[in-house]
Image (cartoon, rainbow, N blue to C red; front, side, top):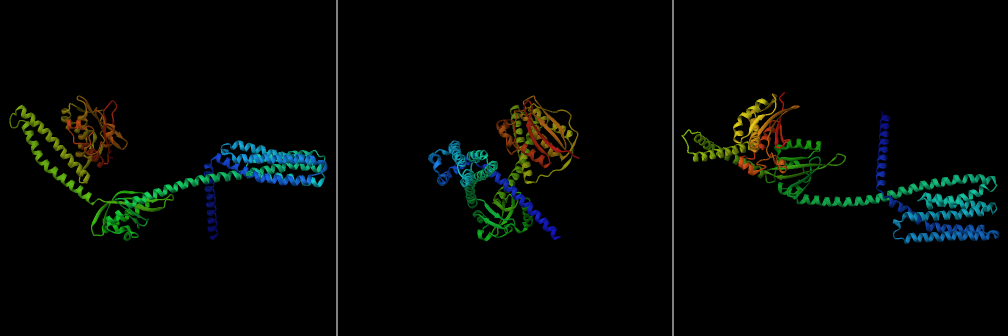
Amino acid sequence: MSSLVNGIESAASGASEVAARSVAAAITADIRGRADPALVRADRVEQLYSQLPLGMAATVVIGVIAAVELHEGRLIELVYFWGSLVGLVVVLHGLLYLGYRNDARRHENIGQWLRWLGIGAFAAGAVWGFAGAVFFPSHADERQVFLAFLLAGVISGGIPMYAASWPIFAAYAAAIALPITYVLATFGNRLFAEIALLIPLFYAVSVAIAFRLNGVFLSGYRLRHAYQRQLVELDEARRQIEASGRKLALFFERSPIAVLELDAAGIIQEINHAGELLFGYAAAELIGQPVTRLVVAKYQGEFDAEWRKLVATREPLAGLKVRNPRRDGLTVVCEWTVTPLVNREGQLISVIAQGRDITAQLEAERLKKEFTSTLSHELRTPLTSIIGSLQLINAGVLGEVPKDVGELTEVAERNGQRLLDLINDILDIEKIESGKLTLNPQVIRVDELVREAIVLNKGFGERFKVRFEPRGELSPREVSADHKRLLQVMTNLLSNAAKFSPEGEVVEITTEELADWLRVAVHDRGPGIPEAFRPRIFGRFNQADSTTSRQKGGTGLGLAICKRLVEMMQGRIGFQDREGGGTTFWFELPRHA
């Protein structure tokens, strides 16, 4: 059993090592990809020219030793000639080095300096190749051995000298190896002929080593430049992070709302000055304490459930209302926004909670609703009596009314009705938003509902010289909804269509089956909905054209009421432009199973 466990552990460690190597290789490849090729090439040339002084010194020393060793009376003139060639090459290399160092724009002329260095390297190799071709056949065995050793050393020394550019080394070594190879191959000695066969192999191995070293140099240059660039980016990122940290710290300290930092266990880590003022505690008294200390004991169970959900899902919460006790014994209602901070590995680092006291706001909203409701009820009772009295007068129950008086009473009745509609709409919207409106769902046939709405609103349409007509066959499907409130939605949509349709037009009503939904749509030929008004069309007291609304009546609450009623019946509502001009308002409800 233990061997199996050990085997599994070793396999897991091996897999992790392979994964680590692959990640490291990917990172290295990414870093290399950041390197600028022009900068890498400039580094190569810089490396080659930095080696020139050492190469010139070595050439002078080796040349002097070789001249002393090869000095003979019969070859004295060739030795002097060869020595002058060595000196000339050294001088030219010195001039080349000085020219490179004094060129302020050398990094812009990299290709030119590299070509000149290649020519110089080939010339240096040719001088040593000349020595091998001339002096090897002219001496005894011991000096031939010395000369062969010398040439092999010069070739080997060129590997580190020109390793930053293997083509230059290849040209340098070829200029040395080709003449001596030719001499050995044509010398007439079998041993020398065999050595001549080995020299190309030695040359190929040397070039291969130079090629590998060249790759190492290139890799090093790329990594250096990439890391330098990455260091600059990291430094810039560090400065940005520090700036962001200062901004966040300043926000945390100076924020007018309470800000708490909590750990995953719900322990308070930090609290700002606004939080101290809100709860009446100093920061030192709360840091290290569980956040449940700031929750009313009665609601701690509910709070714990929400906290566990937050830690499990890592999803932020907004609009969370919590009753928080203060140090002075009072309880305040605060609205909190809670945001978990998660790292890339999915670990919960901390939780930031931002809250504000909404106790006074909630009380003001309650008083406003009570005032609106009371005022609306108090207005509706006498207004209903006034409208009823005017209707009796206009109906002639009290006898014939003079024409001028009749016109005034009709205006009074019409405007009284508008005022009553406004009061009813305000009461409806307040009931909906306070959650006091209850629905009585029942099974309703859509076609019957549409026909009923057309009949009930026929008189309203005639007032604006508009007809309501169904288009196509109405669906007999059923929905589960509140009949009274659904009829209210239809009335609002039909009345809006009548108000904004040109005289003599027809407002069409259609039904459509969409999978599990039934859609009812009202199509008008009005002026359409302005683009700027569309996001606010279902808001309270919103009207696209106030001038038209004043002329034709309207409270600006109808569509807001429709939206909330349809949503309470598990439906959805919307609008779209109608082809040929006008607007189509529609609502959809789930089909009754």
